[in-house]
Image (cartoon, rainbow, N blue to C red):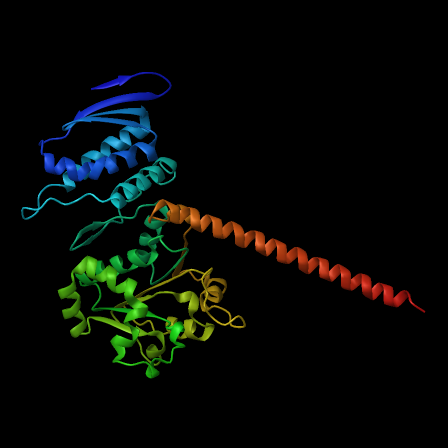
Length: 359
């Protein structure tokens, strides 16, 4: 039942079936925390009696909240006798998706439909139009760059695309690599075998693989070298055919390393290069290979570039605000340094002019 009030304010009532107190507890969260998050973030009021909900607020927000509650209630259906808990992160991501859809309804009509990725754990779907474009670019190009701040999903979605390609037998192996700049790429001096040496630097990639394929299957695929992890320095001299290669943290490659990596790609292979140009750990006198590649390769047709921003962050809401704060500070700092340089130049010119006037 829907009742119009005024000023585009709507009250909507609906019932979630079947009635199940344990599932409703999972949906609403402890002390109704999930409901409170929906109310706070969407600016609506939610009243509940058992499995009957009454929502009041702006029409679009009420519609979104109703859809979110219905979809998440489906997710609480028992699996092997266990009811899945709905975490606050799922509420956050669902709201994030609604807000992006609302802002881009006209410009991205097919958002999220043609680029869903099926994995063992279910469908992984882009949450923002930029993420959707990123996945589409990975599918359509041999080499794709994903550049942007942490939390935008660039590495996670790249791993999902690699897993999907492996499951479809479009490739024969997945190779994960990143520059071990923290160890100066001198891994021979570190204890353990190769995988133990590089594991700490590739943990985000491992975590994504374990989530999508399960720990045991990942272990078996690694034993058969179907999934391979290697520091960037170990790729020199190799040509990689029938592979999906992910270079993570690419902002810490040198120009020579980036060129070496890009020229390793063989037939029927895809490469995804991810990085954040604001997080370079190289020595100050060394230019990032990622920055250089953006300048050199931006007009090569077979290569795509995706640039992520704070609105693409799909972690805790405060992460996006942190990214914005740092970007604003860096912009102000660059402006201040430019003004100081200009002032020093004016002073030097004035001093030179004064010296010329002296007899």
